[in-house]
Length: 238
Image 1 (cartoon, rainbow, N blue to C red):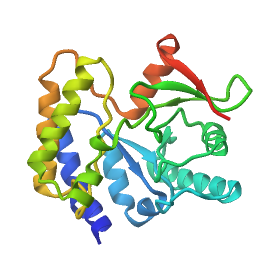
Image 2: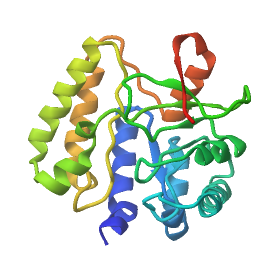
Image 3: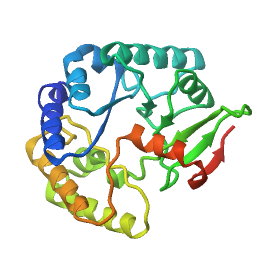
């Protein structure tokens, strides 16, 4: 029921807030959730936000290549049919992935992955020998920029979470890096409830108060990276 709260309350609340603030956003959606709540996925699209893939049933992603490939295509078909447009990015539900994952994503036309936590800048991820075996990696930074550990494990009050996020942003801003703030629009350990959505809005207002800050969806940022390849490092994985 915590997850159903996302569709009924959390996502509509986030959409309203994000539209009020005039900032873009990416919603990473599991295929199963999209099947259960197709109108919610369409509402995200109709509000002008990006919908990206996030596994089918939020799997741990310790699958064999055949099952992994099947689920990647399954979720892609579900989202494409609902959106009437290609899906451009993916984030692993568990952070796990393989070289096979990258090959499948690339073959489906995806331009970015956002699963890793190994750098504080985007980079080109090379996963094969062919020149085209490359994808933009948008690391989702650090656990301290995710609402999950605060609300699931430490039961941190929203005001303290906001203070932590501001501290992280200040350091990232001074270092001229990029920041991925990951929140879950559910109840329980997510940010869908009013008090927790409020601090997200306050965080957005805080970031907007700093000169030079720009907000992107993941796909918008990935396209910027593709247009500026000389600005990115390249990392190869086996």
